[in-house]
Image (cartoon, rainbow, N blue to C red; front, side, top):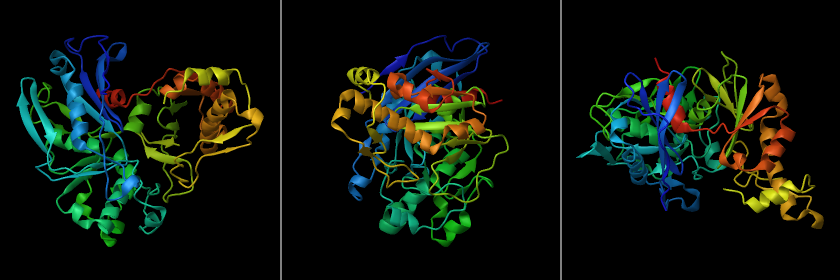
Length: 451
């Protein structure tokens, strides 16, 4: 069943003289678009729309370890999102900001990456000669395979699901796969390249760092290291600063006028933080499909020159420097846990491991007959989630970074009073809830604030 979530107009984009920006986020499970305008009171979302992509595709070459998505379905969801907006609003759009799921990679053939068609509401495009998207969740690169790769000159270790690691995997296991293609990028790099008719993909520093083998200090790929190991350098995109302009649309798109500026594609993680962080003394905690605790680094901060594969903390390029990174819960579970203030039961919730420690799986300890009620189990699970975050980025580190409050976001946190209680026990800082992150709005805000 296709999701159709819309938040209809707070104010129209049609106000003369206002800047109207379209923000797009190509997420792991859904596509979201948001129209944002600037007013005297600040930015305001006028309308948003999301569609589930249902894009999961088979990856027969690597079985259950492969995680691939059908690009056709992703673009179909994107087109449906834009078709839901009133034409009079899209016609006011002068800038487009695009973010998406980081680390992943897809391939296409230059000048044949998409097919443009004309309809009653303007031009749209469909993917042409493209591969599947191999997502950030892909597990084909085993620990032994990763250890066989050259050491990067970067502050980030290379992990499975990273674009460069996936390309190395194809070089070793299926070199013929790469032969039809002469361009590569993330899914959002692809969309930007199609909209601007770029001869060569243009990737932001944010996405380049997420691919591996990128030096964020020099803002350049590890070309010598890659060349010596036989890596196809022609597949590496050019790199630009986040917030920069990739180009202008040579034709209209869903009624958005020809000539609209399109920003270089951004990381969804950075855009999510940008959408809600208002002070440099804020930390952002988002708990939804995954969990991240983020704090800004001091101005002028530079990451380490070499990666630490055992560190739980990772540094990602933001907009003025670096940030440090670190389904629905049933109502009766929460109510039962609220009646159970404490438990000796201990849950380590890392079912999928952590990127710095993939072998660390989930566990339950201190099991006693008296600790097996629904309330005990739920309380222990919530404590384990927060404690796992604290083990990677302790409260003392937040305090040393000057953090004065935590902005809590994400559906799993906002709906779960037990998680909130455990958060406030482990992190004794003021917590502001309801600051939901939104990568589509963040991408639009980046373009809105561009001068």
